[in-house]
Amino acid sequence: MKIVIVGCGRVGSFLAGLLDSGGHDVTVIDLERVSFKYLPASFKGTTLLGNGTDLEVQRQAGIDKTDALFALTQGDNRNLMAAQVAKEIFGVKHVICKVNDPIRANTYRQHGIVTVSRTSILGTLLEAMLMGDPEVGKVLVEKARANEAELAGA
Amino acid sequence: MYFVIAGGGEVGFHLAKALLEAGHEIMVIESDRRRAQFIEENLGSVVLNAPADEGRFQVEAGCQRADAVIAVTGEDPANLVICQLAKWKSKVPRVIARVNDPKNEIVFKALGIDETISSTRVLMSVIEQELPSSGFLPLMPLTGSHLELIEAEIGPNGPSAGKTVHALGLPRGTAVGGVVRNGSVLHADEDLRLEVGDRLVILAPTKDEAEVRKALAG
Image (cartoon, rainbow over all chains, first blue to last red; front, side):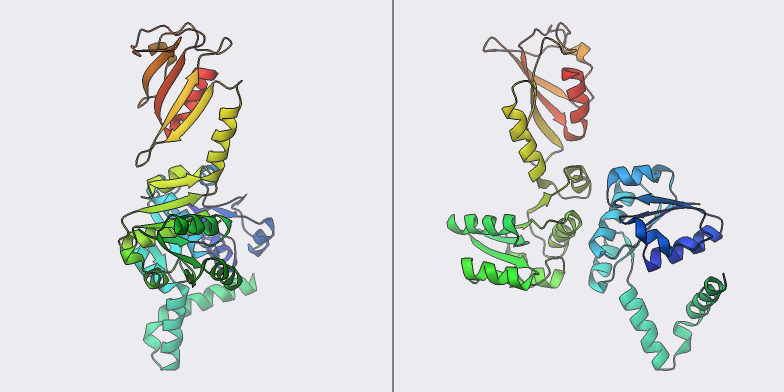
């Protein structure tokens, strides 16, 4: 698949590494060149310097041939704008948007944008870990730890 | 009327002041504490010190009874989200967004925010109207549509003198409303031949402005 990731912070670079080693064609967009240092050394995809909410920058990233876009910058609003540009203007099929504010995540989900809030996901998981309810995060935690181990070993 | 202004920077502050002076009721939502304090000291208790891009603070500011919400922060993504939340959560009948990057006017319209103001574009059109050499003047955007009104003068060196209206090859969806020649209005029939000095009044989709400009001014 051709995948565009907006925002090359911790989450963006981690996901870019996973998808790249999975054989996908990954383009990562960030405003700051220094952010690309988070990418694993083995990353074979494309890095693009620019504002991911910008029509022209998304075009440059080849948005018209893109199967999936992830909006993962630090700013909820920037993510929501980048995601809507990709989905509503360019018709990208799979668009997933990180929104840390759980209320905004909920509102935009009701309006057709797939949002993920690390606040509510991590909070829910942590509560379950404390309460001894391992079922809640079992698969997720195992997979995440395997990915961490692979990253640390590489 | 009751207006909620999101963002108390220079634009928000002066807008608030002008609306108050015109006798309206207003509330400014400003996240920076010191800026909020400055506005309160100058305009009175018309400030909510909170982030405007969170629905509950819009509710606290009374958005449900607002006649309009005007988002004038310096960040386009914030202005977009503020307007969308105001429409969806508080059912505000009219939302107006400032766009800092003129390219985003089209984006905002595509995402359901019909009324945008681009300070860059306003400045550009003022400057263009002051420049006699350019025969191409975008006059104004038409509220509630993706169209704008353009005035263009047929210059001696441009590609359009001597052509018929049809032969200009204007993009689809563009209409020539009339041609002013020697002070009188001519009907812009397709086979009307254009002369140097003719002034055309054109309605065109905003996104096609560059194409219209090319057809008329080269």
